[in-house]
Each structure stands twice: as structure tokens, then as C-alpha cells.
Image (tube, rainbow, N blue to C red; front, side, top):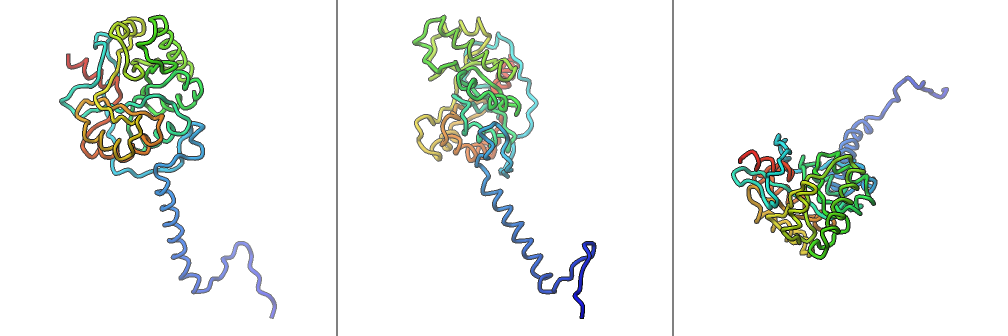
Length: 280
């Protein structure tokens, strides 16, 4: 008997044994693939340090609704703010001291999966090192604020030095993103009233403090950071955190999901200020 040959256009015959096993193999492969994706939920991608988005898609328990609040506010809004209005469940997450090579991309992935817009108070020298990450912050709809160029205690500086810290950081942000910062936050929260007035007069920046401080810079642990934020946040809170610290970013998925479960809606600092202005 001659050998049987098959053309490339003809289907190969298959044993019933293989026909039975094939669906099971496909199911196992699909399940394995899903498990692999879910297990990488909050991990940075290999491209994260270049400012690109993670290819992995997390499935958080809830997502922030689209919030259509204006981000415009007049200079007459006032010089210092630590919170917004208390009659609606709007809150602002703020992250200081970045951008950071690995923590900031990971945080951006976490925020994007939950449709949360935050405010990043960036250090000018870090912006110069990681302009691509600063661009990504803006491109993904977050707000950029001025956190000085070298993160020095403003109370130890002359007025001229304070103005230099502000102007250098503003230039770095504009050069990287084309966007002007609209608010500032002093390093360590240390600033004299006359310095606040000087900065408002020269740059139009209100000074943004905070209502909730988890003291994450002390690295108390992921669960402590999460619980402090969850128990202390109320309507209108401006929440302080630092994307400089990996444990802080580790705490964010549970923290943000917990805040969403409580019914809070995330907005930027400028949106909180705009809401304040409209109430006057």
C-alpha cells in the first residue's frame, strides 16, 4: 500500500482521543493565561521605567466615575488650602516628591485602572531627570503642582531663593509638558505667611497643604498607611502621600478601593478649589 499524503489545504485527520483532550487543553491554557494576568495586577511592566503604560489590565472592584467639575479658579480664592467643601464626597489624592523612576509608573497604572485623577507635586530636578514620566502624568489627565526645585525647607531661604526654587521648577514642568502648574506645596509643609503671599503675588500659586497625612514618609507599613487614610478621610479632604516610597504605592490599591467603596469621588486639587470658588 502506498503512503498516504495530505495537501496543505486538507484538514489532518484526528483521533477521537485527541478530539476529547483538545477542549480541555484549550481551557487549561486560557485559565493559565487569565491567572497570569491577574497575578500581575499591581506590578510594573518592564517598560514602566520608560514612561509607557503597563500591558497588564487589573480588575479593581470599582472605578471612579467621570467627574465633570471645572478646574478653573480665580486668584481671589485665597492663599492657603488644606481641604475642599464638606457637603459633597469629593476628595483629592496628592503625591509628593516625584517623579520616581519605578514607583511613579506603577502608581500611574494603579490610578488609570480605577479612572482616578490625582495631583502630583513634583520636584523640579526630578522633572529634569524624568521628563518622559512628567509628560505621562499630564497625558493621563493628572494635575501637576510645583514642589520646588531642590526640596529645601523654604523657611531657611531668602525671598530671592524662594522665587528661584519656584521659577526653576515652573520652567522644568513647562519644558517637559507645555503645561503651567497652578498650585504649589512647600516641602515639609514649612513656609512663612509672607512667603505664601510672595508666591501668590509673583506666580499666582495658592499654597496647598493637606487634611490627611498618613505619615507614609516614616514607612510605617502598607496596612498602617491604608488604614490611616481610610479612617481619616472625609468629604473635601486633600490627602497627602509620596510616590517616592515604594510601600506607599504598595498601599494604594487597597486604599483607593476602600475609598471608592465608601462612596468618595476623586478629583484634582484645582477642581476642589474651583468648587470652593463657585460656592462663594
